[in-house]
Image 1 (cartoon, helix red, strand yellow):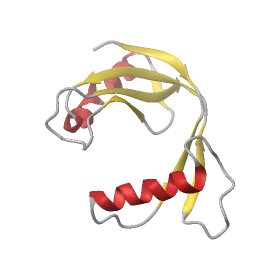
Image 2 (spheres, rainbow, N blue to C red):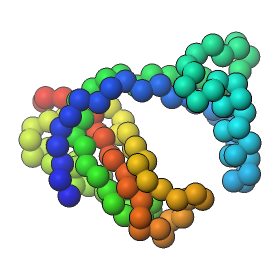
Image 3 (cartoon, one colour):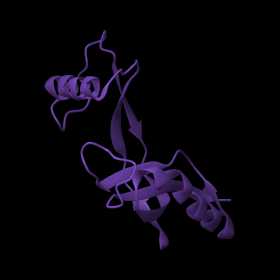
Length: 124
């Protein structure tokens, strides 16, 4: 697994708090999200909306590709975390996962997933 540092741009994301009962509910929620916002819209939400818009800042991150099943993402953080410490860097924020290739529906046993793990870092 190769690990490198690179600049990552800022990202907008939306937060929706609540209970999701089934996969069908997830599809309904995303349908409502895109119906309200469109796939590239940011902001403009009504005050009473359950959706909240947040921004992750641009940062430098230690990045690695994980080419394995979805369930292995937790253990995929161990090597980049050790790499960060070896280079006298500190973790500077929550990790980001960019899903480059995955099946639908998500399956824990599918080995074809490709995920980029981005861990923001700063000098110690």
